[in-house]
Figure 1 (tube, one colour):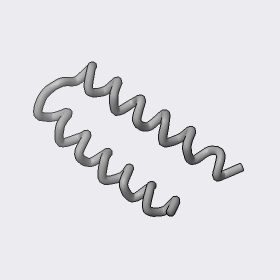
Figure 2 (tube, rainbow, N blue to C red):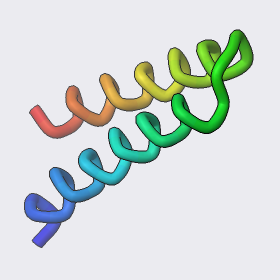
Figure 3 (cartoon, rainbow, N blue to C red):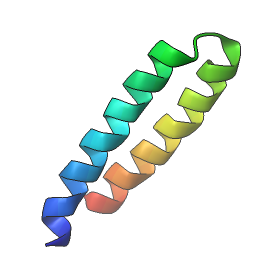
Figure 4 (cartoon, rainbow, N blue to C red):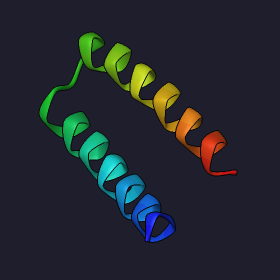
Length: 48
């Protein structure tokens, strides 16, 4: 069950990052995206 949820969460996460890039361009968004990518990398490490 949890294994099936992880890819779905990652997909939603990447999609929301993509949507956020379209909605909020600029410097503020770049720092937020960097923070989100750090969280994303940690999630991938936890999965592995």
